[in-house]
Length: 364
Image (cartoon, rainbow, N blue to C red):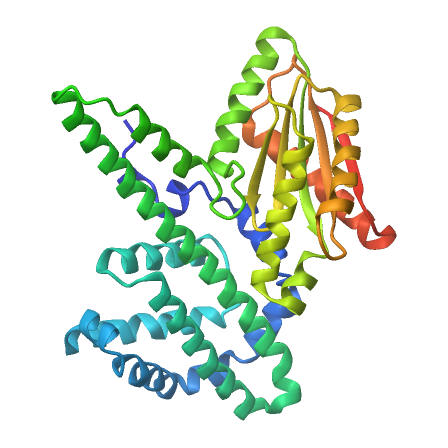
């Protein structure tokens, strides 16, 4: 039996190298962004002690944080960890090891009682201190690219730590559910309503109400097996929004969240009872279309485009990879998603040159 302790947190949470690249891409973090951060690494290294001193002077002035830190030895260890973290920020290496360390930060913070709000406040403080150092060293004009790259990589880190928090809460929920069901079973108490609620919480995206990534994996696995067993068509659409970053940048994340909810409404308006709409992450969505070949799937996508024009605010469209599964050939869930994802990038490239809604399609 494979134990959780046999896997790194990166693996336990189902992350992949491709997933890392996709997340960085969604934040428009490019090779130029990476180079900008590397260019500031020597300056940051020379001033690390001052930067860390400023950071903890502010942190310790807050009673909530001071109580959590507790003593001089813990503070010294935290300063050592912070030294490594800031060095990593400007290293240009945002690989599996980097991501695993960010996930561990989220898990540890949750374990010792640091609230997500406190973590976000500390990240904002760190960003402000680092920006001041960068401007002081390079001037406003030269510092602009470095500051923007720093904003993107800190946002990337915040996403990772937030996911780790949520994953830890879900693990706690699963343990609590097991204990409640055991207690209830011993006393003959029905737990169907509780189980249904917990299942809904665990499988739904909290912002949009659509199925989340884990639920998508389960649905696809089931539908692929059904399609192969009964020789039925099955299609998957993998969509990425065009123009969403501009909404976030110009109007803020609250308006961006409103757009994502509008997208959810548009997706829900075109789906049949057997279809499943899911938020894969960020501004990426999937539609699982059982018993639909490419012709049927195209009709759904046409209706979805019309729904977008009516229901989704701002100049938002989508690029989509559309795949029909061949029931005669074996196809794993991850392979199907990867294929649709690759087609989506093909449609995305076309959208950048031609604009509007674009779809790239294929048969497996």
